[in-house]
Image (cartoon, rainbow, N blue to C red):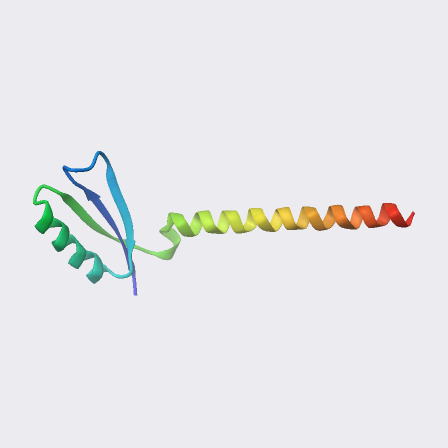
Length: 86
């Protein structure tokens, strides 16, 4: 199942709102509800593959960053143990 990115620009907000929806059908249903509330709103449903997810990219980056920190901490601990044994 392909996820969808919903982009909403409404007259009541100063910017746009982006929300990842679980499916294109769910996005289109939400679009109808938004259009009932504000007929002037601009709502797009764009297919989104997992690779396009900004959240997923950021999560992967932070996971790698945390792994690097853990690795550095382990290195420092091993280095301290070597110094103590010398």
